[in-house]
Length: 251
Image (cartoon, rainbow, N blue to C red; front, side):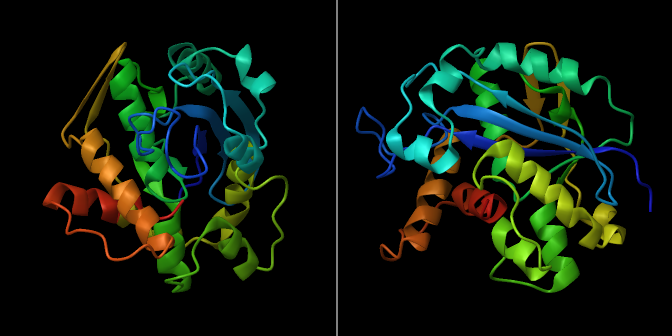
């Protein structure tokens, strides 16, 4: 097992109580804006090396909902004077530096990877870490422990008799808590489970071998919400939506 530095990323985004924007549109990745990149650099053995919260000022719906603030603890005053998405990507890249060739980045589930990809496509500006392989830590944790259902972050910590430290749904706190789970992973599974990006990281642009449409991501998000809220059986999705739904998983 190699133990070079990896990056854990956890996002927070604008959201609304009834999953409906102020304009009355269904909430989805085309209108949800990332407001925090929670980042933690660590070793696979779970040693936290550095962590940082990168707050982002939303521009489409600049005013955070009460629901969003209550969920994330990110207040309006915390984002009002922060940089926009493109500027924060530059700051994040500067903080990260130039990773080694065997660098990987991770998140708890695939949601964060797909949302960063969608947001970067919208802005034409992509974080440097997206050019490197991604590991879905929820997936490797499930394979390691055999847990199939209760695999959210809080449940995973409880499985190992760990209390959550900090504020749940605050990106940087979630990222730090994810690091605490790294020692419990079977890292021999990494090569099998890692997702290679198929992305050329070019300044101001991004290309991918697997294009994920915003419509498919939105429908996957809505289908997931319907299931979680027991609102009835969703309509049969098209093949692309079904694929994205499988990749999305729970946060």
